[in-house]
Image (cartoon, rainbow, N blue to C red; front, side):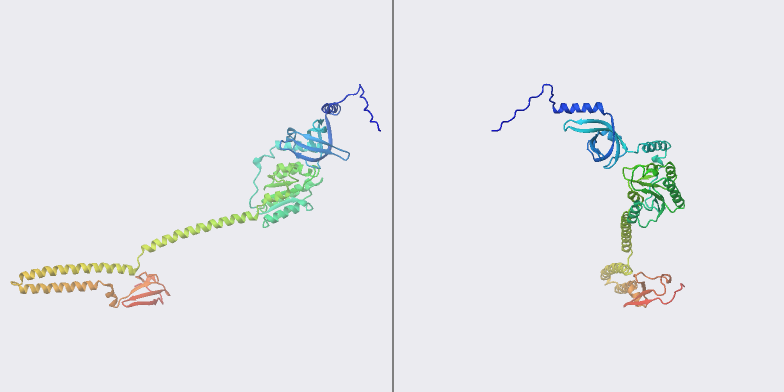
Length: 434
């Protein structure tokens, strides 16, 4: 049989802590011994919550510590921390009691090892801004259809390949002039200024309409050439708009503020300087469609006016038919009148037959002669009798009567209309008016 040992009795002098109380005690101890504290390390697992607070870890080869940066502090940053960035933070150590985790509440942050450079950057930025070099009013829009594009970058930079690829894809018809220059190192500012001035001469000659100043991302030391004051003033003096695409989206340089347009990347700078060819082709297609519709509308209106004019212009045959109808009506009225007069004469003749037979016969003879003369006049009004007497009606191919030699030209086809049909004719030589 094995005996179970009894638990040792607690010493009267020992203290049993509650978990929360222990965490608060540790926090108080940290507060009194370390705070405020400055820490240098590498950002890891950086995340920004919807509330605006940021959470991440700082680490080096020996360890890591959890950090929290509240929204008010995060809004004061002039850069966006990314995983892998070396930073210097200032804050207060504490214990997150719900989990018992040690954490650093960050009250300020700056890139590590860049404090002096960054302060120099801020001083130059403030001075140039005070002189008006960053004023939006002096910034010019990038032309939609540049005649040529100037490019300043290093021939060995990846940015050159990115820009050329984007321009070849979007606007292969636009010539690109490269002015090579170093984009990093002590000699870079002078080379960048000389490259820009060389392109300015071409721009003043009308060969370039926009200039791209680009390089890839890097640390503040890598991009320091683009914070040079002489370069800033050279950019402002450009005769054409300058698009600056230096670094990544979160990188800012003095050149960015001086340029007419800032692009987040070199590729974006190329895209801002040249509209895609498809955009212009679509616009041209839309204009072509509008032109077609306008032309068709004009043609429809012209056709309608032509139809109205044709309906108002009577053909010779129609006019002849109208004249024949008028003659027929006149002949009918004449015959009716003659009959009435004959009837009247007959009644009078019967009345006077006993006493005046000779007078009646004479009157009948005169009436018969008058009737014959009326008949002859009626026949003379018939246009077909005119054609039967050897005359002809001359018309052109459209059926329009030809009444003057000035209406015909040699080689023109005509139609001669005679009593019993039509005769095709052609004009063989010029006709002179009599």
